Image (tube, rainbow, N blue to C red; front, side, top):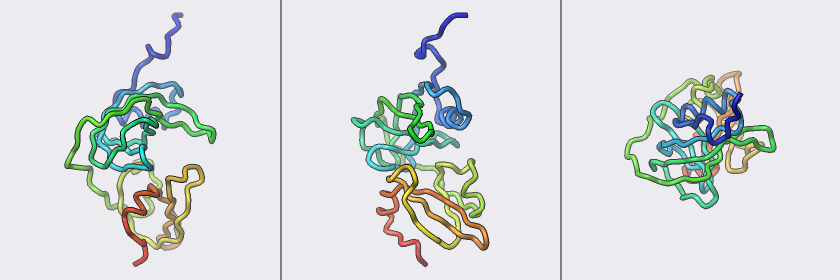
Length: 172
C-alpha cells in the first residue's frame, strides 16, 4: 500500500466540509483552503466564516489581517488539536479578498434550540431571562450567556468584543 504524504491528502474546500471534519473527528491533520464571508469577528483575528448555509469558527494566523463583519476571506490552514482536547482550524494564511453587503439573516429560534448543532456559529435571537454572563471555560475572548426559559436553562456564547461593542445590557 502506498504511503500518502499529508500534502497529498484531500484538501477541504468548503466551510461546510471544514465544519463536518471538526464534528466527525476526521484526522487532525486535515488541510483546508476555503473562502467565506465573516459573520462575526472574535478577538482581533479569529472569526466565524459562512458560505451559503454553512458556518464555522476559524482561527487566523497571528500576522493575518484584522477581519471585519462582511469581509470575504480566503483562509488556508490545518485542523489541529488543542491542549484541552478540542480541535480547531488554524489558518496559516488568510487574506481579505472582497466585501459583501449582504449577510445571513438573524434567525429567531426557540430558546430550547440554542444548544442544537444546527445553529452552531449562527447569529440567532432567542427569548428568555438572562441568569448570568460568565467567561468561557477555555477561551477568554468568549462570553457564555446563561438563559432561562421557564424551568429550562440554556447556554449561548458570544464574542466578548461583540458583547462590549453591542452596548447592550441584556436587561429589559
